[in-house]
Amino acid sequence: MLDAALASGAAERPAVFEVFARGLPPGRRYGVAAGLGRLLPALETFCFGPAELEWLASEKFLSARALEWLEGFSFSGTIDAYPEGECYFPHSPVMTVEATFGEAVLLETLVLSILNFDSAIASAASRMVDVAAGRRLVEMGSRRIHEGAAIAAARAAVLAGFSSTSNLEAGRRYGLPTAGTAAHAFTLVHDDEEAAFGVQLDALGLDTTLLVDTYDIPAGIEAAVAAARARGAKGPGAIRLDSGELVTLAREARALLDRLGATETRIVVSSDLDEEALANLAGAPVDVYGVGTRVVTGSGAPTAAFVYKLVAVGAAGQPRERGALRSVAKRSASKESAGGRKRAFRLLDGEGIAREELLVLGTQATPEVPEGWTARPLQRRLVDRGVIVPVPDPAEAVRAARERLEHAKAELPSGARTCAPGPPALFTRLVGG
Image 1 (cartoon, rainbow, N blue to C red):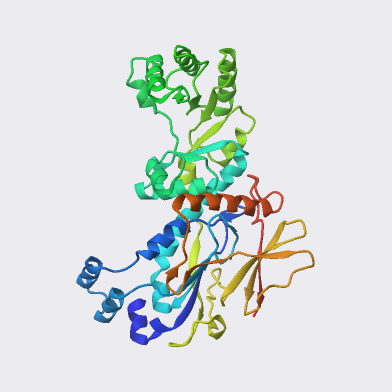
Image 2: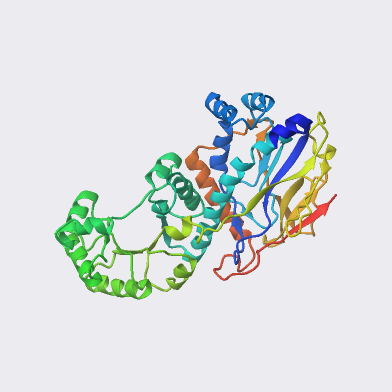
């Protein structure tokens, strides 16, 4: 596309692209925007050096003109987007890219690959946080996906409300809290459970979490408590159950711990947990959930299905101001798009409850709302004519996104945060022209 657009001159036409999802995964009530903390650094270093250009030249599918253009490429456009942690709904313009057609079209894969993955994980994680109802969740999915994706998934899950991650590189890179437990292999390599537990307590302290279901769970719990008592504690900091019928096992484990006097020992459960499993465990005496596969893979975190569509275009050399561009839209059956550069607002009633997502076309500064209602603007400027707006350090960015998500979810109508499937909590309405 770029090579042909350079030949026709279209590459220099001002253009506006929007990123949006036509719908939410079945049953989901809201989505969570995430990925900007990875996208902006990636954009800052997005260029074509000698190695890339040499390979492209060797493939012989680009003209010399295109190779020369890529050699000098540096994004000079403007990007507005929903900040991380903001909720989104079908047709919400989570990102708007304004640049020349050549520059904007080159960013499509970079933008979509990051925003689709991170938003899918954050949306699944947030839904699990809702169902967990205040109980801690630890992200443990690194062994189920690509090693690079595992780091991104850990960031997105903690951003969405998980208390910590087992991925240490994610902890180092983004300042995330980390946590983990021993595996069954650690128990199996020792002569018996009590010896394994004793070694772990000595090495990691009395607050460590002991995995008690390698052999027989009641015997494992008794061995864990005995090992802790031999070291002056009433019980270990926590035990973990990783198999079986977890509701029943958690209740039995709690009763046994209490009978043994280990009343302060917490119970951690894991084993392919998803929203349904968490809902089933709501009445069980569980303190912490370890969630892996179902928060990082497509089965638990279906794609956000964001698309990157051209919505406005101007003539080559024409200023990029919004009012000077012509709206364009796709009309394919079931894949229609709405043309024109839009500004997004969330309409809140007099009680502060969100009622709809309002997309405003044209130059109207502020949408008209009923008396007592407010229109909260949703997009923020991230890149201004090629200059990336300063962003907080990685740890602060995650913290701010967590807080933003809590505020955004608190605005949603009743029922939006339940596990029960249903339509999107908000619908979008297009106004203006």
